Length: 155
Image (cartoon, rainbow, N blue to C red):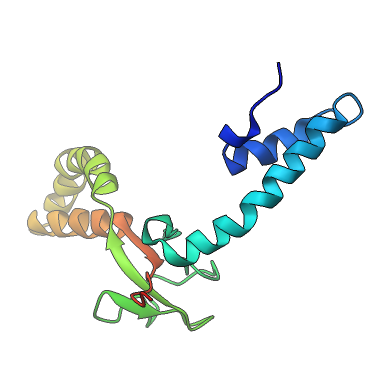
């Protein structure tokens, strides 16, 4: 039975082409190449027109376009507003908060706050609320991501 390559995704086609025995199945290898070539133009045109295919490339303190590090204390990271500009490639990006990361890190952070950080600060004679600020700031930084700005030009 011959495989139906029209039902394969592009990644499945690429994987099949990379792993096929070309000597044993030269016709299938040619079919795979033809299917990939026929899909490439439609993929590029759909990326330019469809907004649901947008890839934000979320990064943790890295530019989503050039993927170079942006320091936590840099001017770019500490400017006000959601939209920022990369100091390396001058491409725009925006900040977002991943609530899933925040929720996952909340319980361990709360335990550290109650049993380690707060008693330590109180033992040094500082107010216990300082540990709350430290933990909240740490959670906010861990949950922050940079992602590409989706173009609003729709033609």
